Each structure stands twice: as C-alpha cells, then as structure tokens.
Amino acid sequence: MLFCLLQACERQKADNTFPKKLVVNVGINIADTVPFPKRNPFSEEGVLLGRMLFYDPVLSANNQISCATCHQQSLAFTDGLALSDKGATSKPLFRHVPALINLAWNDGLFWDGGAKNIESLAFAPLTHPDEMAQDIIELIKELETRLDYKTRFKKVFGKDTIHSAFIVRALAQFQRTLISDNAKYDQFMRKENGVVFSELELKGMQLFEQKCSACHSGQFFTDFSYHNNGLDATFPTEPEHMGQGRARVTLAPDDLGRFKTPTLRNVMLTTPYMHDGRFKTIEEVLAHYDENTVYSETLDTLLINEEQRLGIPLSETEKRAIEAFLYTLTDYEFISDTTLSNPFSSF
Amino acid sequence: MNKLIKLLTTLLIVLFSISACDDDDDMPNVNEPGSLSIMMENKFGTDNVNLSSTFTSSKGDDLTFTRFEYIISNIALVMEDGSNYEVPDSYFIMGQRNDNASNRQMFELSNIPAGTYTGIKFAVGVDAASNANTDNYEKGELEGGIGMDWGWASGYKFIRWDGSYFNNAENTDINFSLHIGTDDNYKVIEKDFTENITINAEMTSELHFEVRANKVFDVIGFNELGLNFPPSEPVKTFSAVMFGPADKASTIADAYADMFMLHHVNNMN
Image (cartoon, rainbow over all chains, first blue to last red; front, top):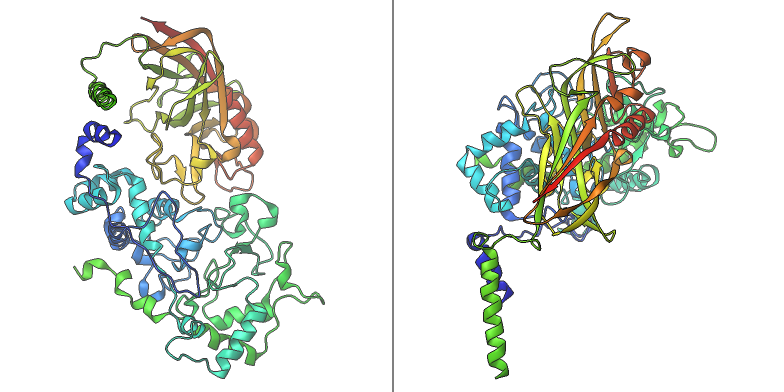
C-alpha cells in the first residue's frame, strides 16, 4: 500500500530508468574489489560519460585543453614533461603531472595529498588559471546546451539539471577504472601465460624488496604515504609553498619536504621523476638514492643508516638489476586498452 | 467482517493520503507545518555592506570589499522542551559575489513542524563530514568549483571576503583576502529568542539578524599587521587564508562567530 501511495505522489518518477550497475574488476594479486565512495557508485553510463568528459576539450575555458592533454594514455596518463606548460596560459606549473594509475585506492591525491578524493580534486585543474581556467558555472551552461551530454547526465544522475558535482563524479568514475594490473610482473605473480622472470629480473625483484619496498610497498608499489626522500636541504615558501610538500596542507613542521610516494607501476613510461620532474631518467633516480641524498631535519629515517650514511647504497650491478625489474612493471595492455582511450575517435 | 473493516480502513487511509498529496484544498491550521524567514543583514557599523562603499574599521583601516560571501549551515530550532528540530540539508551561501550578483541576505525555511520555539542554532561554515569532499549537490546550496571551495586542499571557504585597504606606509591600496575554512574554524552559534515564537501554517515568522562584519576588523588591523602578510610572502597582499598563519585564522573565526546579532523577531498571525 505504501508503495502505491509513493507512486501516486511521485508520478513523474515512474518513467525513471536507472543506469546500469557496473562491477569493475581488478587482478587478484592486487585487490579483491575496486573501492568507490558510497555517493558515487560505478555505472556503465557513468564511466562512459566520465571518459567522454576526460577527453573533451569543452571542459577548458578555451575549449582546447582536455584532461588527456596532460594525462596521455600512451604515457600511463602523464605528459612526459618535468613541469607541464600545456595549460591555458602556457605557464609551467609548479609540480610534475602525476600518473593516473590505480587511483581508486588512494586516499590523498596530489603530491601533498591536499585533495581528499578524486571527485573533489577535479575542481583544481578545471578552474586553475594556468590549467583549464574554466568557470564552472559557464561550463555547466555549455554542457546544458549539448543535448547528448544533457541526456547522459540525466541518465547517470537522474536529475534534469547538471550540477558541478555530476561533472566531477563522472570524471572520478572513469578515473577509478584506470587500473593497471596486467604488467609482466602481474602475470608472473598470478602464474599466468607461463610468464617467467629472467635471472636479472629476479635479482632485481629481490633487491627491490630489500631496498625500495619500505615506501614503494605492496602490489600498488606505494605506501600511499608521504616521505622526505632527501632531494633538498631547504624548503622555500615560494612559489605557493609548493616545495614544502605535505606541510603545505597540514602546516605541521614534521611534514616539511615530505611528498607522496608515487606508484612505480609503469615507471619506465612516466619520465621525468619526482614532484618537480627534476630527474630525467631512472638512472638519475637511482643515483640520487645511492649517492646524492641530502640531509634535512625531516629526512626519512629509512634513508639514514647506522653509520649515519645517507641514502641507499647501490652497486652498478644492483642498479641494472633493479632497472630490469622496474621494466616488468610496464603494463602494455593499460596503455593500449581501448576502453580507456579517447571515445570520440571511435564514435 | 474483520476483513471488511480492514479493507474499509485501508480505503480511508488511501483516500486521506491522496488528499494529503494535494495542498490546494486543505485549510491551513495551527497544527500544520509553517515556515520561517531568516534575514541576515550585512552591516559594517551602522552602514550596510556593499561592494562600492569604503568602511573604516576600529583599527583605522579604510577598506572596500570586492566579494563578501559566507556559508551558513546546519540550522536547528530549539523547541520549548529543549529538543531541537534540525532543518535538513540547510546550507546557504550568503552575501555578494561580484558587482553583478545580487546580494543574498535572506532565506526561508519551510515545512517546520508546528510548535513553540525558544531559540535557534546555526553554524558559520560546513561541518566536518560535508567538508571532506566538495562534490556536493544533495546538501542545500553547497556546490563545488564556484569559488567557495579549495581545489588544492579539499574543503569549503567558510567566509570569503576579498577587497582592498589603504596602506598608509605605501600610500596606496593593497588587496586583502580573508578565506577561512578547515574544521577548527567551523563555528556554531546559538541565540535564544527574547520571546518564544510560534510556528505553524497560519503564522508569519521572521528572524532578523544583523551581521556585523566590523567585528572581524576589530581584531585584524591590516596597517597594524604590516604590508606583507604572512611575512614570508613577497607579494604585497594581506592574505589570512586557510594555509596562512593558523592563529590569525582562528582569531578571525572567533570574531565571525561573534558577529551575529539577533536584532528582532516578527511573529504574527
């Protein structure tokens, strides 16, 4: 009876068609399920809408910049630049474009973890004058005039009008599907397709576990935490406290110079390295840990050994082995998967 | 027989419920929910806040606003027995965004249970749960990406007051921005009504607050604090923002918690 009454009062809702629930899969060596916030569950239509928005330059003020301008699939969703200048003003940004890999498991985003979730994050690149420079109210108006988008938003979120929340939720749904779980490493771990590691790769994996996995831990190759890895002795306030790392967000002196541990999945595709892209090659990165680690008060204790030697000692042979192992983290399926690529080229 | 009674009762309930959906033909009465208008008149001393006037603070600063906005949320009305009626999803962005935008000083709460109320509680800012993400649309007027939230560090700006002040040392106007947020600066305000008010479908009820912005400038003197603030910033601007000196942000938050004055209450048939 209650059901009848509800129907009578809300007759216009009767013709609602709901989006199709979507279960996103992930390799069993990584996780059982793909997490999502209760307010933004996956749907087939939601992920596709997010994918369209991700690749559509309509999202930027000048209609020339899309998310994919700086997050290119072929480079594991990075842009290959130390500091990107692909934004609206062509001014180089203050931090290196992060790779978009297995984001669903992250609880803090950006190099300092300032963005608390993928949904909220999107407003930053969308509105920053040196990035997409968009006025969200204008963007909503523009999307409202496009019947195809309007229809899709209604299907996914069930409302007649587009809200800014819907734009970033759709984008987040798509971004949570950017899952890299099929590198040679993964197939080796899952004992698939008879994949074997060479001797050098095996040695590299062993060394990696000893020397790198304290921070680049587990199947995500990150502890999702923040560390001062000895890049600098001081952390200037300019520009915009960017060099201060996590302390920019927390204001805690202990967080000075601590930056988020990036995943090392697809690391050979995501040059250059560090929060400011200062290292062009993986050799430079390994050399940094071996011999160029710099002391500061917040330097991670993992990088100070008992004899007060800084960094991680690595012989040249060890470095070659670790590199060989890092190559096994390249996921060629991830960078060619057509369900993650520009949907407009196939329409 | 029993079955017949059940059936008849059901029919009656259905008929009654259907007519309840229809609000045209029901006479309002004292047991039916009513509404409450809340006026928040933005003042600087005795003047109204607008985006064209210059105001002088008790610290001697001459200042002009280019944006004067703040978030009011989580309104609860205190009933005679001391319990609260919490107004669902009550989040409002008040004030004025730019010259072309209208100056929001009033909102109406509807569907308030009929009864006698003795006071009101509301907050400046956004509660921690809703401040953890900015992709809101379910929550009143909270909307992300329209200048009342931060992108680089998720959360809302509880107040956003931008403008300029005359710097005596430099003999010129210097911009200021007071963007205060973070959970610590969420302030709950409680006001008792001088006389109880009655809310129901037959009553017109209005609360009239004066929002005395000058209170904030009683504790923050721009000329007094100096040109470059925070001191490490080389740009000539005063910014007491979320990531600015935390003690200044909390000083400002304490001041805005104290700026609401319940001027009068209208409550009549």
